[in-house]
Length: 121
Length: 113
Figure 1: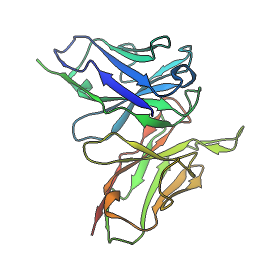
Figure 2: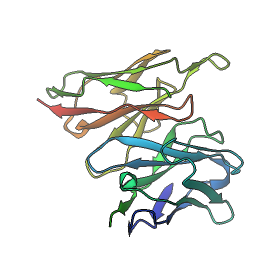
Figure 3: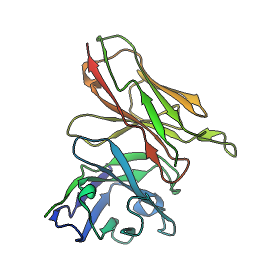
Figure 4: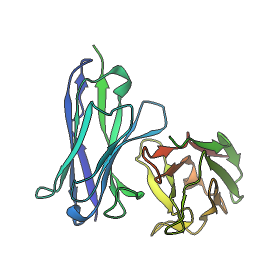
């Protein structure tokens, strides 16, 4: 059974940093692209970032480019999102999601339960 | 960026009746090299993460009820729930994964009439 468990969400002050993790199990992690999607309270889904199976390709939404960094450790079946220079508008539940293939250009067939990031003073 | 729009914003359908949700992209998401539409549909129930229903615009995800079907090509797409059940109450999102940044529609809330 595919399982994705996010962690690392917290209350952080504006301009602060946070690192989210997503522990994956139940599939061959190193052969699938992985994605972060966020959802602000009461709002819709916003795509944040995607990383290819090897980690060689990464892409970002304009709203986080230059501030967030996606990475993965295939030896530990873990996905990361390093978030710097956080703003109030980054407040959201952050979901990690498994792609349907190696390529970044795929849909997401399994999702974690999400971790809440709150940016506030 | 590709802008995704959905209509209606919300709809209420009687149990057993058909529900239809439309999704439109600001540019084509049909990739000529593989003739695939890079369009997915997700269902999100309150307090839960999204669930993949349909990918490549019309391919049903494994385990998804055959009451859910997707159609369309290019810029215009439709998600149909053939016979609405109580468990289908949710917000439905379309998403394009053709061009970075991948973008979601604003969502359509489906309720029981």
